[in-house]
Length: 312
Image (cartoon, rainbow, N blue to C red; front, side):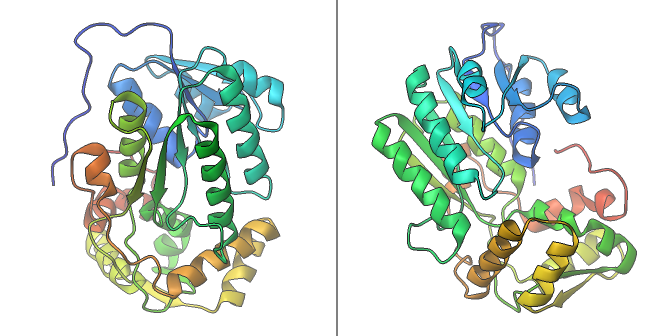
């Protein structure tokens, strides 16, 4: 499947960035900053450290400038926000995430930001049993209350989340989850980034909420079958209990709050609450979302033990 190429400016862009990107070295932020650079859109990225490899790669992008900032140090966030008209808000899903994001919203309003694009999550609602969905809903409500223009991106489970199993897939031909045969309309991170880029650079996205999914709902066994085709050898999905999954996550040194939150996420998926196929990618970007076969083909080298490929 072919997708529209990144657009380029007819003339050189203003050298002064008006867009702040947080979470710029994560999976979504990396793809988003590449898209902005390819489109000739200058931006400022808030990073915690200047000298990490991911930060150095970010700094090398055309139009990128860096601001050292920490969500827990308001004065550094305020400095990063100075002069910005639009901001992309993304933090790790940690126990501090709600407080960090609420503080960022307040500081953005004080700094004169006019449009916030928030990375939220599928089915964010105040009454959810999933802690991640509750905190996203609380931040969405706070943003609405400011009166600022906003765009909420609510992606379903990331296809690229399977990269956390890349070693097990490469070495054992297996991956694991407590989900049974429930279907999920998984979405490619590259399409999430494209929706964010559109909301940050194009008119018509203010006060919009985009539910972002792939074009089909799949079981994990169906994903395994498509990975098998792309890799040329069998890949099996193994259903495990929530307790087994939580123990594995804790064994990977994931903090208890995050590990327990992921188990809540998977219970939500297991109940079939993430199987709906939505039109948000098409609405935000103008083209259809990538399917899982696209993802499996493009990332096959990573699942074979090679470095994660450059996104297409």
